[in-house]
Image (cartoon, rainbow, N blue to C red):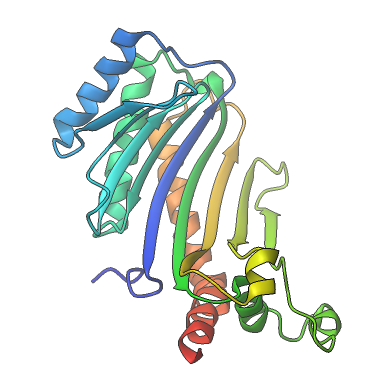
Length: 247
């Protein structure tokens, strides 16, 4: 059983590889890359190009679980919404990293940053900032502001980045994103939208000349799961889900 599926309404596992130089954008190169990805995942048959030139291929998004991949000017992105396991998502991300060196001329020297991200969406029809403050804002120096008579939180989005090594090249970041605006608070009318929690492990800088994108991503995944279970699940995800359920 996937231990993360029950923590939120949806969860997703993404990989982002940011490059120093622009990626190849020739029609033949882009199509050959996505054709090779589709060979491994035939259900990824929806291909399109955004106005800014980004190329995207994805499965049908009306499914409860779906894959997607994107080539931007200086970034390769791969994502899996509600994967059956982290291993399944990792295989997709590693395929993109395996293809990039010989199909997109990508070198370990060209790595600006490599991310492994796990995200969690909580559907809530109400003031997002208020519920986040209720779930995560207790016993902090900000409580005096939160207790102002008649006051209502308008922007409560905790974020923290921590360096995991002395050289600061490997970092973890937790960020909460809310989607409530002042207009909704004034009217007291709130659509049902997602509160998102993002937990990212990032490796900055070029890899060693004999370094491997796949191996580095595996290390990030291991660190991400370990820190998520030690510092995020019981401290942030479950309190937020419990606060929503009480409403």
